[in-house]
Length: 189
Image 1 (cartoon, rainbow, N blue to C red):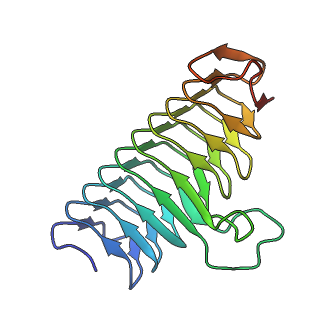
Image 2 (image 1 turned 120 degrees about the vertical axis):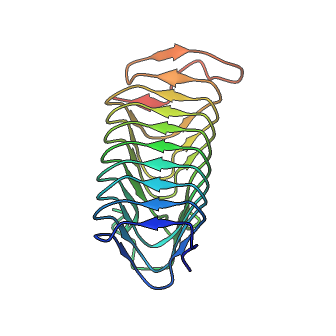
């Protein structure tokens, strides 16, 4: 179902079954799969691919060449129905990838609200990103990573476990410690 106030560019492909909310904007050459739900006011700039069982909330801005909800890179994945959920008011910049979960990891990759995912960031299968987080350019979350609210991940940083509330890392050391931060940063890089 496509809301009558939504804009779909003539070159975009929105497959039957997709749900597009009020005042959403689907830009040129975007592809939206049949199990996708795009919330009110969300903008897909151009060349964005959203696939799989993916739900995107309200007022998100998703920039060109982002890929959301595609098959994950876990070799155990055998096509089971798994999901991606994205909250509200996120800025997902160019070439960001967010892969769907795996059955072994709970079946869900989740990004909260009010986050900034900069160019080329990667959120792997079964990750959870909280609210008001920043993933700088080329930040990479391995599968099953949890990033708590207000965390900051520096550019070109790989994270392979948990990043706690209000912690920041740049791949070498813990940059700032907030309430509940461990004495050692859980980043690798």
